Amino acid sequence: MIDNNNLLVIDFDMMKKRGRPKIDVTDTDLVELNNFIDSLLFLSKQQERFNQISNKTDFSDDEIKLIKSNLREMKVHKKRIETLEIIKFKTKTTQQLTDLETEILSYDLSKRDDFFNCHKTLNTYIRLEKITQSEIKRIDNKVRNERIQKVRKEQTDEQKRRKENERRKYFLGGVVLKYSQFLKDNYLFSSEDTEEAILQHLLEDFIVCNYLSDVTNNNEDKAANVRKVIKNNHSEIIEKIRNMSNEIENDKRR
Image (cartoon, rainbow, N blue to C red; front, side, top):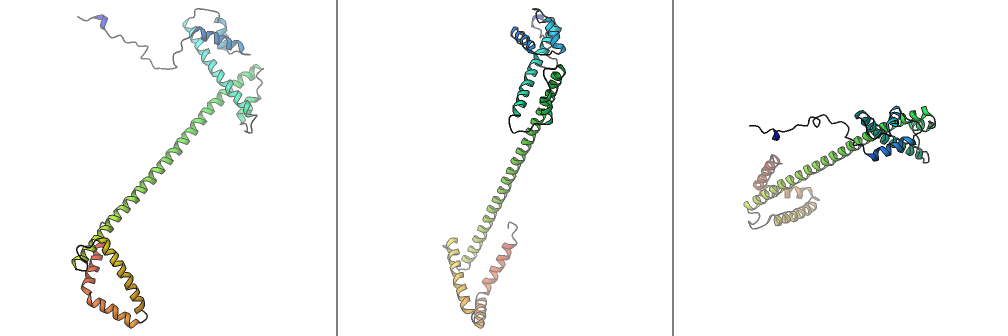
């Protein structure tokens, strides 16, 4: 048997599409609205309609809707007045007024038509300001995103360069080890010699050879004889070094 007391009750009103946020009208709202409307020089039609029911204590649904509409208009009106004061203050600065701001200040608010035209123009001004601010924000975000992407790209490029340098160092380290082992295998250096010691020794020999070359180069015959003797006595090792150099040059890891 189904217990009807436990049936799920669905509030279809809650399922309706949301529109404006719900406004609960309070006595404070009514007092504020009355004071606001009393302060106005000219009233719109819906404000005049509210005046006709403002002394009531019980309102129909349509009258509640009217009150809520007037409350919203009151907030918008205050926003327009704040905007008007900002524009007036602008005249006291070095900022140049826009055509729309000039038009707003040209209205005589003591005249009915000017009063409503001014507020209508203020609505347009506020709407355009929102669009402008939104566009500025969009551009700022775009510029910010472009800068972020640029920094990320620069970081990526730097990472690539750093990785390439590390790969290059690793490859050159392998080359040094390969030459070092070759020199040891051919008994030109001891197996106990470190790569650092071998490199230092080779550099010292290179400097000495350069010095000898400078001395012998003063006599072309002597220089030619020195090169010939070196090649004849060490031709096999020199050939091996050249072959090894070709292998390194053609290494795919290079």
